[in-house]
Image (cartoon, rainbow, N blue to C red; front, top):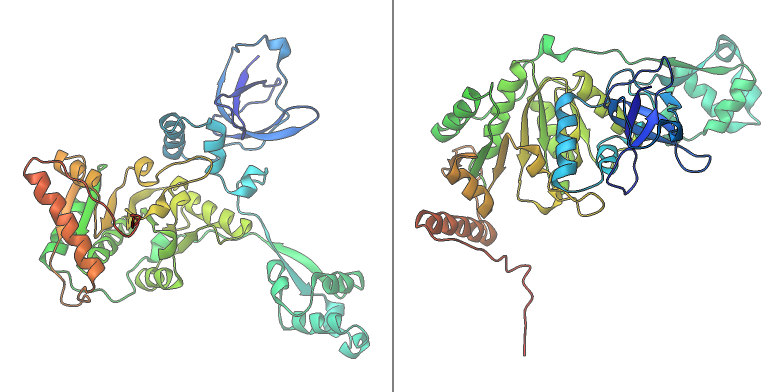
Length: 417
């Protein structure tokens, strides 16, 4: 009888073996419901299926239910997660479940769920509103429904509540219905809609070099002073990627994920832009995750955990301000997002020594951006000046064959006697 080796979200560096009942099949990467402990069931993820177990088969419990017909992760993300669990010496169950939206961890179907809305029935459209004057919330709710349907997740933001709607439903004045979101293919009418800056020679050279390597895996470092036009370079790279019908992941530090940042992308590209970060509710996060997986999202902007989002056809990963400490997960599974990400394009004003070493060794292609484009703001301030002089010092010492080290004095304690 086949044996499923299942990863569970427990702090143990192993999988658990379960029998697959006759007629039940499952693929690696699919979720299953299994018994675990005393009278308890857990959601697990199948890592592999074989015909053997280290334990006697008669001691194994059986899988209760297979939740997915296809793996929840793409092949590339699956390989990345298995590698990360091994590289960081962390329990495989914790790693796999960290990469899933919370609703999928709880067993929700990995598909776009129907969206529910309230609407006024024929009786509700005809009834006299004054008949509800003793129930002002119901009167208010029905008046609003007569203007059009109200999505269920909008009710919390309105002046009436779900109880008023349920009371109207009992009277036959309103009811619930659902719609399944339709998939819209952005590739059929993709175009750059925002105003573009004119690239200078350095920027155009960088864009051309990155574009020429589009069909192979390569990592690029865009290093330059603040205001040197690094952002415009990777925006131009995104244009080329989207024009080929591929998707893009743009990772930003927590502090960089602002409405202004998101608005800039939506104005520039006539394509769906989704956002993934901790401020979303569970349903919003699952929706964005699924849109990336089925190809409906052209660009996903997210913080460090967005790295493990499955894409249907990912063309580029951009990590903005890669040196930022918020890319390091400090609790539970501790990881540094740019390392497992195998960065395709990172931009930073102050590259650290490891990046400079990788660039010199040829592991990372470097495109310097030292000149300020005419349309870009002129950098100023002591922080920018000191940061880039430190970086230049690294380059000089590296070129002379000497090792380099740097101290950020803003974090160094001051000792006074």
